[in-house]
Image (cartoon, rainbow, N blue to C red; front, side):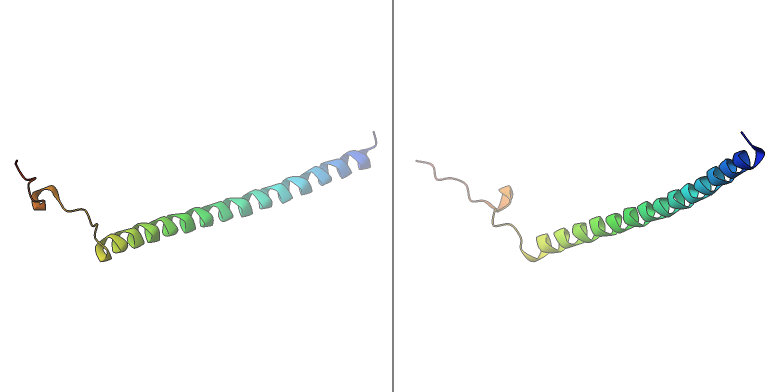
Length: 72
């Protein structure tokens, strides 16, 4: 194997490694951003759920508010 061929192969591998590092960093940043977006969506869902419960209370009365059954 000639010296130029070996140096060319090493240079090619170094370029590939640099490209892969860049792709990994980009993907890591994207995953982090998506995780933050998902957390924000979960918080918004919880808030909307609480607001919905506050606006439209259940039709079922609390046990202490129920009238006792008639005794025959």
